[in-house]
Image 1: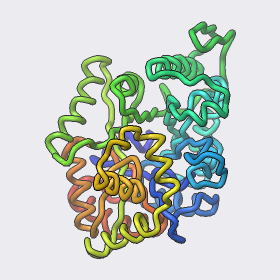
Image 2: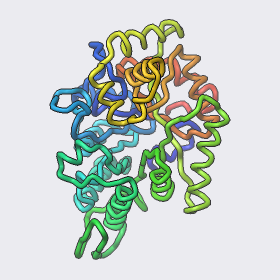
Image 3: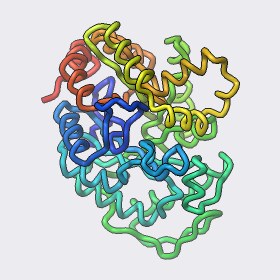
Length: 369
């Protein structure tokens, strides 16, 4: 059984070690996606019993005309997944693929191969690409949101047929046409490897509820009750509309130190005083167009958050506080959390030694055997 389907109430994983992670900082200890760093961190997470190690896909950085800008320095997620699968023994290894960069016939064979390498621990995070600079680099059409998800639906249908059909098949769609299609070997996992999808729009969430096993949310409220309602609605939509039970995960960046004051000071150090301002400005411009209307105070807070950890929830404090905040997410209905730190090696070491025992004590996780 793939580890993401185990009995732990709160599942854990790593996000983004094949790139820089979620933080945008120039501190010397910030994570660098070398292969040596990836193997060392992945093996530590694997030994600690984390359920998943998830890559992301990026073909072009957020800053134009700067190939060395950190957001563009990313190891290929499928090649990465094959190597990390060989270097680990327990955790699920998730590649991420953008539908415009890879034909589903190619993806089917590559993913089945990685599933064999991992002995059935592979998973796939599928993305409907929105990032215009990447689309333009590939000379791929820039689609509106509805069209993007129609394209992804066709891509995914061909992929899953290749993973499951006993015979060859033809497919004629709006975006893809294949004849006598088939792929061997098929994945070890039946009916298929688990699928992740992160979507924020109503259309994207509907796609994820219909097709994914693990759906991501960005926590939209500080209110625990409102967060619980947000998650419950997602699960209810999947169950009532499509007859499917899904897991809902989220991304969390952690700044953990001995005390809350030390943790706050560390965020000030790495996310403000040593912020990667070029990346932060470009990230906000490309992903949050409404930020232009923010007040100076709101913009300052937004930049701090993006510097500390873009695209997710930020938890700052000591081990007790981190544990309490993760417990709150679980009580709101979150099934799993992908973790990120500005320094993965240091952050994971602190988390495993100080937070993980608390989560086990509170019954959110079984001790690793």
